[in-house]
Picture 1 (spheres, rainbow, N blue to C red):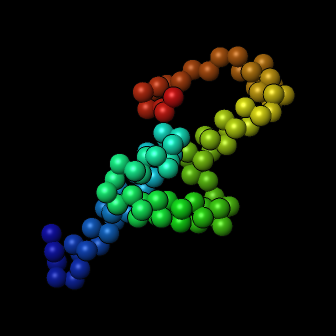
Picture 2: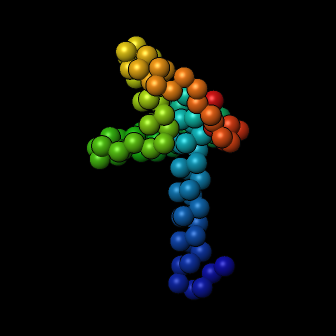
Length: 103
């Protein structure tokens, strides 16, 4: 729908931003970001946008959801005392809506 004042353009820009963000999150969920974008014809553009997105997050000391999950996994992999502490504190974890996780 076009209202004569650029409404269509605004909706398109929002859609594109959401679409690109969804692709970035999907790439992070696979754990293979560099290989993920190769299936798109605009691979170079997506890789460039991804790099800029990551640079912007880092410059602002921000994490997105997949960065938080990845950081937690890395801590558990490399700090065995940390892992042992949480394993003793929470021997079982119930995951509700498992199909919505990326495990």
